[in-house]
Length: 161
Image (cartoon, rainbow, N blue to C red; front, side, top):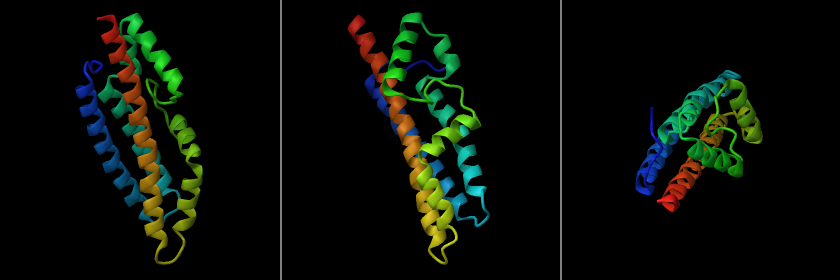
C-alpha cells in the first residue's frame, strides 16, 4: 500500500514523475491517431486512460482502497479536497464508462481528431497532434488534481503538528 506523500518535495517529485508518464502516454495516443481505421484511436485513448488514471492515483496514494484504510480524519480531509476541486477521478474506481464521460468533456477535440484523419496528407498529423494534446490535457489535469488533494493533506498535518 502506497502512503500519502509527507512533504512538498516528495509531492513535487511524484507530480514530475506522473507528468512524464502522461507525456509518454500522450505520445502513444498520438501514434494510435495516425492509424486510418475509424475508432482505433478512441479505443486506444480509453485503454490508455483506464490504465493511466489509476496509476496516477496509486503514485499519490489516492486509490479508493488506500483512502479507505486511512485514519478517518485524513479521509475526511481528502474527501473535502476532492469535492472542493470537483474531481471526478481522484480516489474513484476507474471504469471505461467514467473515462468515456471525461473524454466527452474534451469531445470537440475528439471529434476534430476523427474528422482530421480524412484530410489528405496533413490529416494524420493533425489528428495525432489533437490526440496528443487531448491526452496531455486529461492526464495533466488529473495529476494537478491529485497534487492539490495531497497538498491539502500535507498542509492539514502541518497545522496539527
